[in-house]
Image 1 (tube, rainbow, N blue to C red):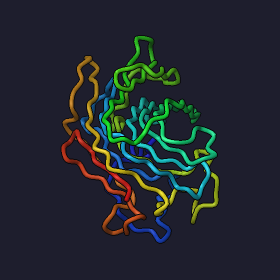
Image 2: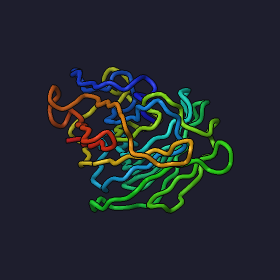
Image 3: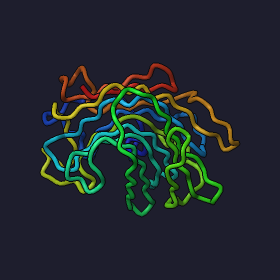
Image 4: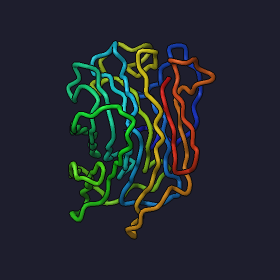
Length: 246
């Protein structure tokens, strides 16, 4: 779950000597819906590009994902593509996944089918279930699971409560040491191919709509930071976020 959604989305290109994402355990390149409305779902379409996690830390991961935050406490549901390095307790290899977090800070990971980075496009969707506070998760319109850990039946309304993009990090158990903090640094052992993420959200009235406004956050942006130690992110439209890790 992207903490930038809670802390507020701002472009971050500050160079740090160890290329660490401040005190966070993950680095992000994300877009967040910024229309001030609660929603009942999020939908993203993107290609299956390469995701290569940090090979030097057991359980490191890279993923490209849509998040629906149901509370700024926070609690959330997410679905997308992920690749874990070998030895992770959550999975290993390139696969479809979904996950959920509750407002008590508990995390629940759900491994899906293995897949390949063949460039094919797929859809990823989270939307309100008829059961109060439950959300269904889909890939290519096929049901993959139900989140039952949420305390609310809509997203929160702050910027980033509907969010999408890339995440790179160490294991959720945060094995160390990392330079300076138990955080996530960027280095040439990890990479992510280009992902063009097209985004819609579902209104409380039940209609899907393309994002009319968005805000953006890219940790350790390329330019001030050298290739291999940076992330790219660019909004072609308010509803299209393109990101990669060179």
